[in-house]
Amino acid sequence: MRLKLSTVVLPSLLLLGPACIVEAPGGASPEERRAATVAQVPPLSLRNGANLGGKVELAGATVQPGRITPGEQAKVTLYFKVLQPIEDDYLVFVHVEDAEGRMERMNVDHKPAGGLYATSQWKPGETVKDEFAIYLPAGAPTRALNIWLGLWEPRTDTRLKLTNPDAVRNDGRDRILLGQVPVAR
Image 1: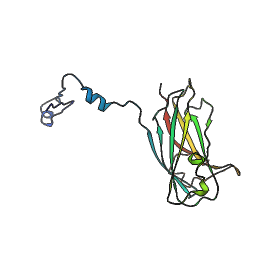
Image 2: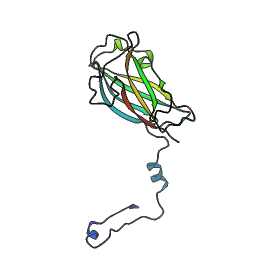
Image 3: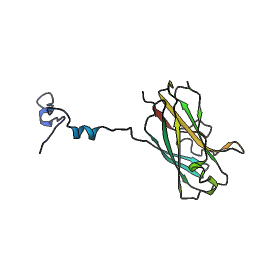
């Protein structure tokens, strides 16, 4: 059995002087290197808890990959926990904005669940999964993208009201900041 110590500080030596550091020769083995590296940035997992109109909670989301490269896209998955029946059919509105405000906003508004499951059909107790993609144009000068979202009823041009604005990041206009996605360079 091969014992490899990267760094060891022995408490008894602290009384005698500087700490003793033991480093194994040769660095990491190929197996250790594979275990410590990833081929792809993992999803960015976000918990939220935004309550929309007492009817729906945005329970969480993932962004895959966890950073976006200019000229490529990222997949966003939202998880809506249904609290009460919803009378109207809302769209998921999504505003993708440059963190520095140098780019034009991208709108990714869409029917939830790929248009297969309207909000008026959602049942209390269900968690509805909604997926969409965001795209960052090649050459975009931003370091990060902010993803803002909520539920919007287009006939009346109204958003489902955020009932717990002190609990989640928002802009005061019923737009929830889902998160900030770093841009890879």
